[in-house]
Image 1 (cartoon, rainbow, N blue to C red):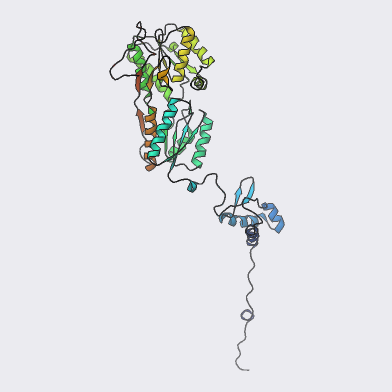
Image 2: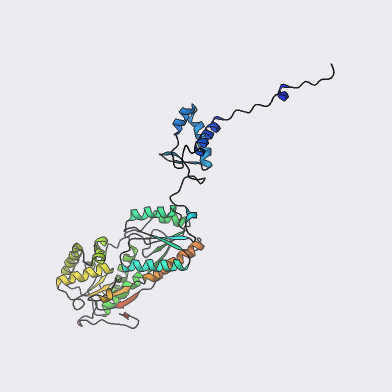
Length: 407
């Protein structure tokens, strides 16, 4: 026979397609159901066990099929709930999606409450500075609760904010979440109450100097029995510093520091009610009445804040003590419309608006350079002499020195 090349079976017959892996077939089944709108976005798909039983395969096979679809963004898992069809290729719809917000970075401000002049001015300063710098502001209140503060911190970080300003809850000297953020170089600035256990950027009023000046005014007006009345100062740096300034003035002027002339365990949440309701809280007023009755030699009181100061004046009224003729009272901060009250109080202006602006400036700087050296900014206070203080033996007259303000 002539040379005749034999054709092999392989060359003569078309090549048969290889077997499609089971997980690919199951993936295609799921894809078809999604594309044909059998399963709509947000619908729950059959469970791994249900799919394994339907196709009589192992759960490993099902997991492989699902994993590819998850990576492609077509489905997503929710721990403990199941697998769902994605609304788009981005997978699980987040609670917050950063790219969807308006242009410009966002800063969060956590504050205990927004019910008095101090916190309102502080917020105003922060808001104005950030607005001028092109930032958006998100603020939340913690109700002076450390637990609420921790929860909100986690939530706003997860929401994707670019920086945080925080006014810590009262009685707090350490915050593990803030420490972690600081160590991770997340932009954080603490205002008013710094945390002694956490080395971070902070801005506050000069509480030591402010309390010193207030106490010194009483001393130069001839008072020698000067009380300090406050809510619990332990763990709240601003109150601790005010107590320190009070004691420093007594020490430097050669006056005995008498612990019996100190009332420092008032309940802050109860006392602050006077700023909202316009009426002093009965239990707090009674505590101060008893304190003054036990110490009749006291002729002046340095009140840690305006709420305490107003309650002291109410207690004096109940005792028949005239302010300032028989009892001088200095507030270590101011309150709304105080200049128009029956007895406008002598007070220390904490310059909270400036504190707010400085805090915002510092945060913007830290956001631009997270590795810069941590800074502590102390804003000078200002003593404002009004009608609640007087010189001993000279009713209604208070000593004024050059540089002091009177309104």
